[in-house]
Each structure stands twice: as C-alpha cells, then as structure tokens.
Image (cartoon, rainbow, N blue to C red; front, top):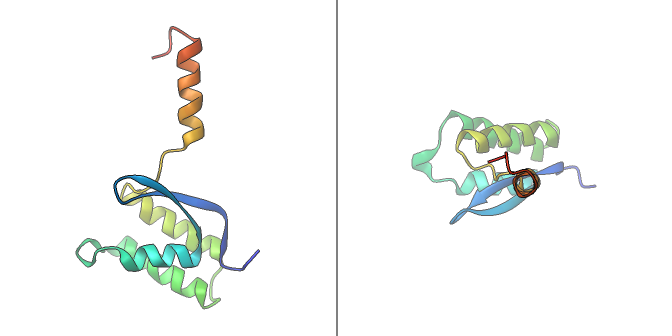
Amino acid sequence: MKPDMFRQPVSILVGLGFPAEVRSVMDAYRHLVEWPVSMRDAAHTVALKACNAALCGEIDAETARGLFAAFAEKHDLLAPDTNSIAASRLRRDRDPHVR
C-alpha cells in the first residue's frame, strides 16, 4: 500500500450530492484546494496543513485522514453509510412496528 493511502476511504458528497470516496492524502488535498476561498475556515486550514505535512512525510496518512474527515463532517460533506440505510429499510420491511 502506498504511504499516502488511507486504510479506509472517507465518503463525501460532491457536486449535486453524489458520493465520492477519498482514498488518499492526495485525494483529500485536491478536494481541499478546490474548496471555495470564501468558505475556507480554521477546519479547512488545519486539514490542508495536515495533508501537506503527510505528503511531505512529516505526519502519517491516518492523522491527515482524521483531520480531513473532521473538516468534511463540520461542513456536512460526509456521505451517509449506505449499509446502515439498507439495514434500516430491511428492518422496516420486516417489522411493522418500526417506522
């Protein structure tokens, strides 16, 4: 596995709400660089610096992943877990008391 790859991708919503998997520090860095300047905040700055540090080998990829995920969560970019949605629907189909 390449050193900038995440153990588990961060699923975010992009464009018109389509899910995308951010699988590496470089992927996260690209998303952060493309983030509109007018919407950048402290969480963006921290995540961007962490990705840059990880690309330079100063911190590990999982630390950068955590900070990118925190940025994504703060900005409501995290995609819902499709497995939990499917399980929820399955429970409703089988149990008439679950809504």
